[in-house]
Image 1 (cartoon, each protein chain N blue to C red):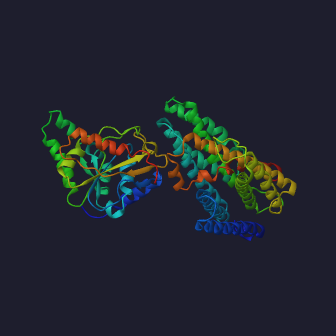
Image 2: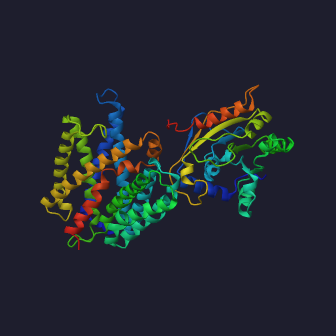
Image 3: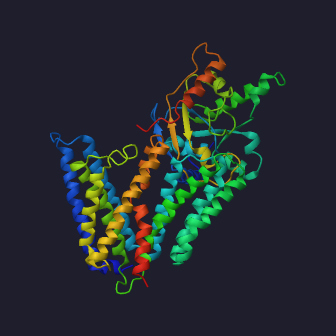
Length: 317
Length: 219
């Protein structure tokens, strides 16, 4: 995908993101050095952790742009594999699930990316939601252990949906052919990433500034209605301003950004609920040191497939 | 025994580390070149390779596993892996319990302990799974007596408990294809046989030393 490097708008946008990151990194370092500031230690550590996570995401994105079409499939395939590994390490499974899990890792997940590579979009849409949904309970039933049967099938299915189906749709953006926008699908991935991550950040900032009414304090103590709405409005505005980098008109860009923000919010909330449910304290740190991919993709995972299908339905071909 | 690590052993160790994504914690002691007996819970065929690969390479070259003769001499591939690749010390499983049940004289037990003591020599370390067989991973099973007798025979050597988590989910007993989940290996505080401590007492203490390492959060 040499076109990515010659795409001056893409490079400009990406360059802008990197400049912003450099500035944020410097701010983070300065805050860490100065002990007299009235911001708490943990807030500064969180801030720095978030910045280093963004650097990692930029590295992955840059890699996806330079390694070409097949390379990007392999790269996202590896990410999906590692994410599923983290998820299934955290979620309790039983001895009877062993072979089903083996199939999930080594057959279903690679198949998903092969189907994407051959651009068989109908198969892509039904692979995990329908075919895996039939295969998994069947395979668990064959293993013969009926205890917690529905729960076990649902856990594995959900893992494949989030780590396989949803994440692969971020990669699928790079495969799109849009009339009048040929050779620039990477901008769509960058657009999705910027709007989604800025929504996260702005939700947090607005929440700190004017947040009062908690949405679901048991699930995510930081999330407030004020923060969510503030984030939604400001990130949608930001996304609208980026219309020039996309095939959208400003109004369409506003609609797309709005959708991404709503879904980003839903994704983050659901992943928090899962973490609370499985009690991350047992294995959380192990997963964290091995990349913490699950934490990075939480808000992206719901937005990616919907954004992809909207763009494909209205703009592609 | 020739010095150095067999290339196939290094390869298998790398593969096992990749599959299990193991994170190693030295919670009760530091890696050390002194002679030691590492003893751990046993739930998977990957246990030994993962524990062994977690040791620094200069220690690894001098650390040998204790393995069951009946299993590892069954096929020529297993025999090759045990004897040539990992330089395992193959022992009769159950020699101790047989010795206790009056069917065979005590020399069976004595030769088992002598074999292990000879393998230790004056510079080697051993890896031992005192449960004697792979468990389900739910709890650490009862320990067999070899650890106690070896501890009496060589009181100068530290015995380091280790606990491996999730290995039973990665490659459980009876399966031959691994599922690549993440695992955790924790080394605990070394123990020794106390003066006048009886066998059951010590074995229970050793078992407790292993099972208490379960789910120690990373520091």
